[in-house]
Image (cartoon, rainbow, N blue to C red; front, side, top):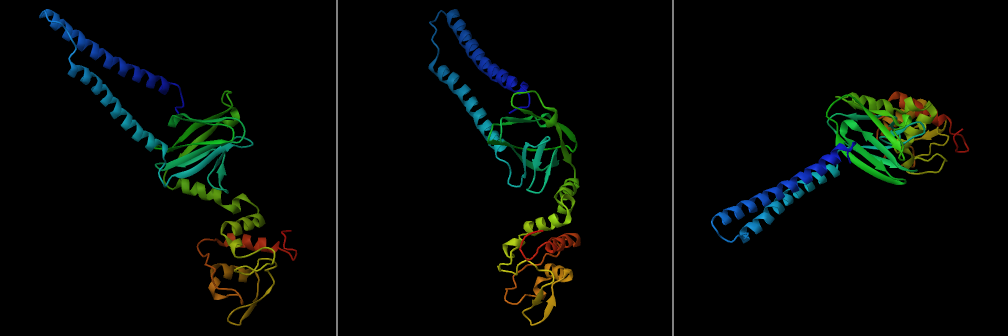
Length: 301
C-alpha cells in the first residue's frame, strides 16, 4: 500500500486511459472502414478477422501486463532469504523496533543495500506505520500482523510516523528511520546487543548464561545434567577425571569456560565446547558475579 493517495489515483487514471485508448482505436478503425465502404457504394460489415483481432490484441496486451504485474507482485511480497528481520509495535512511550529478544530501539535502524523484512503487529486496536521515503504504509489490525520488505538505497535519516486507530499522526509515534552505511550498522547493533551495557553485572551474567545455552547442560538448583550444576559452584572442591583436584574459584571458572577439556569433572562427559572468542573477559566476570549469587537454596539472592 502506498504512503499517499497519489499512487491510487495514478493507477485508476492509467487503467482508464488504457481502456479509453483501445476503445478509441477500435471506433476510429470501424468508422474509417465504414466511410471507405460508403464511398464505394458497398454495404459495410465489420470483417470477422477484424473483430477477432480487436478482441485478441487488447486481451494479449492485458495478459502480458497481468503476467508482468504478477511476477513483480511475487517479488514485492516474498522477501529474500537473507533479509534482516525487524518487528515493529507500539511501546509504552513510542515505537518499539525489535531485532532480537535482547535488541530493541525506539527508532528504526537499517543497513544500506540489505533487504529488510519489517513485521508490524498491534495487540490492541489498529496501528499504522508510515515511511514516506520508501512510499511505505502498513496497517495492522488488532491482534494481527502485517509485513513488508524493502531495501534502503541511501544512507541518511528519514521521517517515520504512525497512527493509532483513525486519528491523525501522534507525537509519540513520530520517529526516524536511520540507514547506516558500511560497518556502522554492525557497530550500532553490537552496542545495542551488549548485555553489559543493558543490565547490571549480575543480571547480565544470567542473561549471558541463558543466551549461550549453558542451562541446557547445567542446572541452577543442584540437579545433575550433562554437566555439573551451577548451584554453589564457587568454593566447591572439584575432582577431575585425571585424579587431580582443585577448588572452584573465579580462575577455575574462567579456565573452564575457555579450555573446558583440560579439566573434566569426574563423572561427567567431556563434551563442553570452548567459548574462547565468544565471551570477553568482562562477560566471564559478569557470569562469575552471577555465580556468586547462587546460594544453597538454589535461588538467586
